[in-house]
Image 1 (cartoon, rainbow, N blue to C red):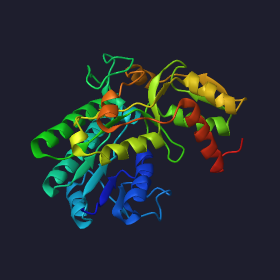
Image 2 (spheres, rainbow, N blue to C red):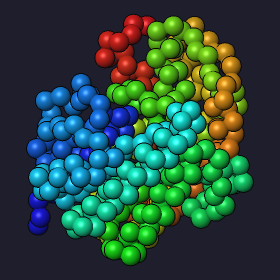
Image 3 (cartoon, rainbow, N blue to C red):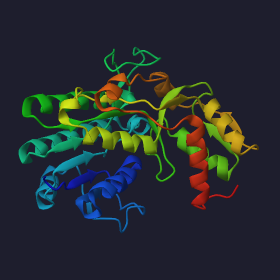
Image 4 (cartoon, rainbow, N blue to C red):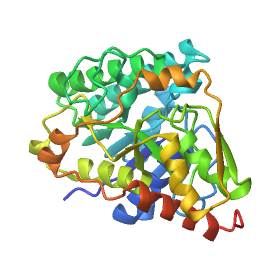
Length: 320
């Protein structure tokens, strides 16, 4: 069996930090190389190799892949939905060219597997709001969503044309206590915990009844690892898999937090992110992922809320 050597691009981001640590537990610290344009995240320091890397510099990326004897690439570097709307040209360029650079190198160097995340942002106002299916009308209205949808078909193309084993998940909003969110429309579901513990109040940038698909980070990391470890003949989707966790509104998560912090209060001041949220489904149908590689989420809103508050308090960031 070939010894895997994994390169994680964008390892200092919200998903990257936790995915890198999870992969190091599975494959061994020295076999997972973390890379990012930013400084190494403090949570990664001392846990394994780190290189400064710009995914847009194809030549340097190619050199690192060869030098490190890389067998798998996880590409997590991207500009997310809310940030992308402030600079659409940059978001498109980074999200598209970064992926194409990785896919080209994967083809040339016969990389065994590539992971690239898509997002529920591929869906638009014409997609079904409830239990949005794997195959459906997809008309994204943000540059992030457009870039992710185009990226899904580049992944599919490289798989069909060149046999690159590229795999993908359409992440819902992700909630984590370890790393900060990265400029997405679902960021409120992370910010709310910090403000609840620190200020005992939170002002939501989405209206109280805005339902969005969400997932607790441990479930998201497990979904990613399970997809990548599944036998190739179990993978029927080469664009990107729907995966679902929990769907809730700001009002519902606020009420759940209030059970633990009775004095917690919420107000609502919807901003430009409300329009983005309104264009997305309220819940996702992930039957295909469940049937193909046995995906099943574990965390509910109640268990996720309890775990988030417990871990943030244990980190001694806040006192209640």
